Amino acid sequence: MADNYDIVIAGGGPVGVALALALRGGAHRVALLEARSPGTGGGGDDARMIALSHGSRLILERLNAWQSLSDVTPIEHIAVSQQQRFGRVEISAAEAQVPALGYVVSYVALQRALAAALAGSGVEVMTGCVAREVEGGLNSATVIVDCGSVTRQLDARLIAIADGGDRLHLAHVEKRDYRQSALVCDVASEEPHQNRAFERFTRDGPLALLPTHRGWSLVWTARPARVGELAALDDVGFCTELRATFGAALGAFRVLGKRQVFPLVLRHARQSAAPRTVLIGNAAQTLHPVAGQGFNLGLRDAWELALAARDAHDPGNAVMLNAYFSQRRFDRNATILFTDTLIRLFSNDIPLLDGLRGVALAALSGIPPAKNFLVRRMLFGVHG
Ligand SMILES: Cc1cc2nc3c(=O)[nH]c(=O)nc-3n(C[C@H](O)[C@H](O)[C@H](O)COP(=O)(O)OP(=O)(O)OC[C@H]3O[C@@H](n4cnc5c(N)ncnc54)[C@H](O)[C@@H]3O)c2cc1C
Image (cartoon, protein in one colour):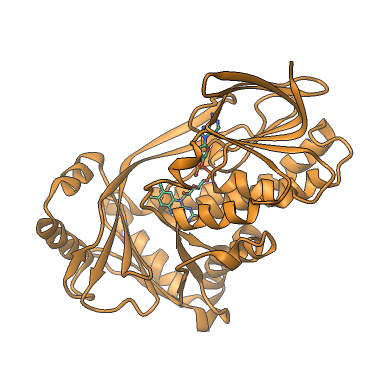
């Protein structure tokens, strides 16, 4: 026999949990399914750090998750440059008249803070439960769930798929393989970070250093073979390569943690897989981490979906979902385009583009409206 809910969320990553939190206290009966078992902890040993925008901070505050976030490091200054080529842009919080340009937190700490806010919220959380199959219908959608050896069927007026694009391949997905991987690792440097972040474009891919409570979070993007070589180096060899690519501005580097590799693809799916279903977060779009937009965009998906569904008499009906899809279209498409263009323009070795890249950075640096546009986008997304 099926269990009945108003809304089922398949995937308890940061976006799925944010949606559950934004729906709490409403009239709807909500269930959240998460494949990981309770003992594995939020995010497990995921080494990635997430740069949250100012807009995300405002949403997380409303979800009561910001208050318990640990080890938050504000970004007060960002320098964007190219390796061995001209063009540089510097952005400061003071110039933008905000307390910080962004905030760096670990994926694990973010998951923990969201999970803590969810406790006692009235949302039924089922961990160790894998959504195996989803089917849309006229009046309700159905999800088949494997919880250990027990298989259950849940019916809901709306099923929100927030599985990170991992397993429930429902909708048509457009993919572009960037032929790049990201190597993520915590490092320390001789020079303190002073709340600065660096983005350095190389012909292989961008290298970012984000300030953290321990030093820096390095996100080094390059061809998969090169990333494989970097991952296999000993710590001394790795730090030598890092200094050769980043430059000497921060002095010598020291490795603080293990190196983790993430393959990078652009995936964007149709927002709806079937009637009464919706894809949000990485399930809807998986972006290159170059501009730190993925979670920030997914959080806006969750927030706007909750606003549309919370007071709807029948969440998931076609009118409500179509209004949500058109409300999200511009932000989603513009963010995908912005991220993808950065990679196309800056991560290649076409000599003709060398000049264009320098001009683009010089324009951003020298033309205040262009720079303001970039800053507002970083702070708030497309509505900035
Ligand atoms: C190296 C790197 C750096 C990044 N840096 C930034 C950054 O600075 N800023 C930023 O905004 N974004 C960044 N991102 C992107 C960000 O990590 C993602 O956008 C974000 O994690 C998406 O959250 P999500 O909840 O949609 O998906 P996920 O984080 O992938 O979570 C999906 C969840 O669903 C669960 N699940 C999967 N399948 C099922 C199933 N069938 N049934 C039940 N549960 C299931 C999984 O166990 C998981 O908990 C970065 C990404 C990478 C790779």
